[in-house]
Length: 480
Image (cartoon, rainbow, N blue to C red; front, side):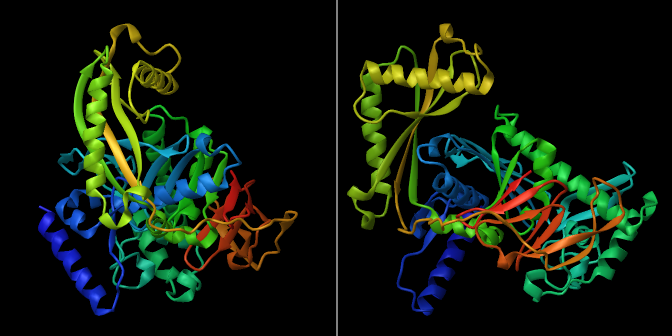
C-alpha cells in the first residue's frame, strides 16, 4: 500500500537534490534506529513508519551516554517524552540501550518488523479541546487541528480550541514571542474558543484552559505508565528527556505526577528539533532476523551455523562504500521459558559458540527476566525456548562528538520580566510569575520555579519548587 507512494516521494526528493547540485548520498531514518540508503527504503518502506519519534530516542541515548559519569553509561535509564503538534511519543532507554519490540501495530495492521519501542498517544499542542455530550465532560484529543488550520490563536481559520490555546490563556506562552515573534498569537481568539468549549459545563475560558492542561498532562502520564510500568520498568528510576516543541511546557508537571525526580531539556533550545538531531547522529544500520525455534538443551553448532548465515546477509545489505572494517555486528536472541509467553530480547555473545556461551545466554535471560518480573519469578525447570535470532550491522555515518563546556559555580539568573500565569495545581487565579530569557542562559545558570523560561521555538514551564540548572552540555536539568 505504501510502497508506490514512498518510492515516488523518494524519487522526487533525489531529483530535487540533484537540481540543487547536492553530491552526497541520501539516507533515510528507520524505525529500527538507524539509517538506510534510498534503494533499501524503496524495497522496505515499512521501515520508515514511526522513524521520526525513534530518531528522538536515538538522540536522547547518545546524549545520555555522553553525559553519564565515567563507567556508568551502561547503567542509565531514560524515559523520553516528545510533545509535538499531534502526538505525545514515549520511549524507554534501559541500561544504556533503547527498548525494542518485534511487532508493530498501525491502525488495523500488524507487521513483523523489529522497531524501537516508541508509543504514541493523541496528545499534543494541536489536540482539540471539546465538550463531549455523551459523557458530559471535557475531552482533549485524539482529534488534532494540525498545523493548518491549527489552533484558534494561529488565526489561520481554526475555530476549535487546542492545547496550545490553553497554554496561551494560562500564560505559559508569550503571544508576541511564539517562534521568536515570527507568529503572533491571538489570545482573544483562544479565549473565545475555550469559552465556547467550556460553556456547557459552566466553565470560563480560564477554567476550561486549566482543565484541558490537567487532562492532557494526565494523559501523557498514563502513556508513560503504559510504556514503562506495564512492561516492568519503574519510571521513578529513570531520568526523563523532554523535547519537541511543547515537551518543556508539559513534561515538568508530567514528571511530578509520576514521581520522576529529574527532567532534562536536551541541549537547551535544540530540544524543539530533537528528532532531527537524532537523525543526524544515527548510524547506518541493517537489522536481520532469522526464525530459529529451538528448545533447550541447545546445540552450539546450530547457533554457529545460524550466526554465520545471518551475519553474512547483514553485511551484504549495508552499502559497499562503508567497507567491512567499519561495520560493527551485534547479536540478539528472542528467548522465553517453555510453556510461557513472556519473551525477552537479550544480547548474545559474539564469537564461536561452545557450552560456555550457551550458559551465558541462559544466565543473561534469567537475570533480565527477574529484573522485569521480580526475584523468583522465573521457572528454569520448564526449560528454555529460543524463537528468533537477530543481528544488527552498524557503521558510523558522522564523526561529530558532543563536547562539554567548563562550568564554574552555579549562579542565579535575574528575570527579564513578569506576567500573570495560572497554575492549575493551585487554582484558576492568575499569579505574577518571573519570566526568563532562555537565550542568555549559560552552563551553571540556575532558575527556581515557579518560572517561565522562553526560547525562540519552545518554552520551559517550571512548577512550584522545581529548580533548573544548565549543565556542561547546555542541557537544562530540572530537579522535579
